[in-house]
Length: 79
Image 1 (tube, rainbow, N blue to C red):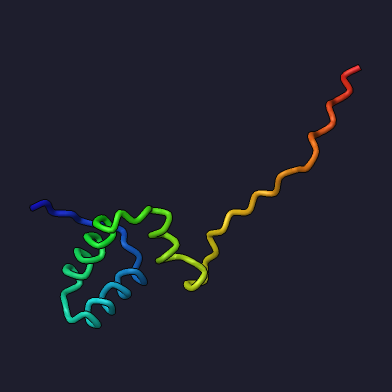
Image 2: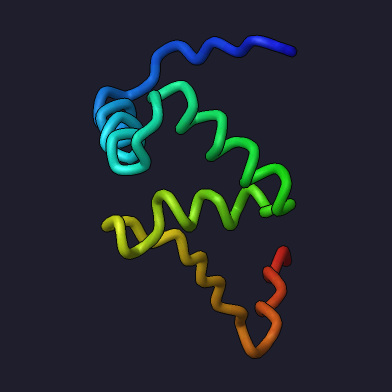
């Protein structure tokens, strides 16, 4: 089996992982393994994963709104 080290993990994220692990009565390492396994096995898109962890319910809105012009721009007068 492979090993993975994650450096520079935000303290808030780590504490959240510890809390989830306590709730599931497993180690923090096991909680991370379960999260990664379920994410990969469910073939969840990365964008969906970000929405789940960082979406509006967590105070961040990831919605991208692009407004299109209804008419083309006017060409420049180069005379």
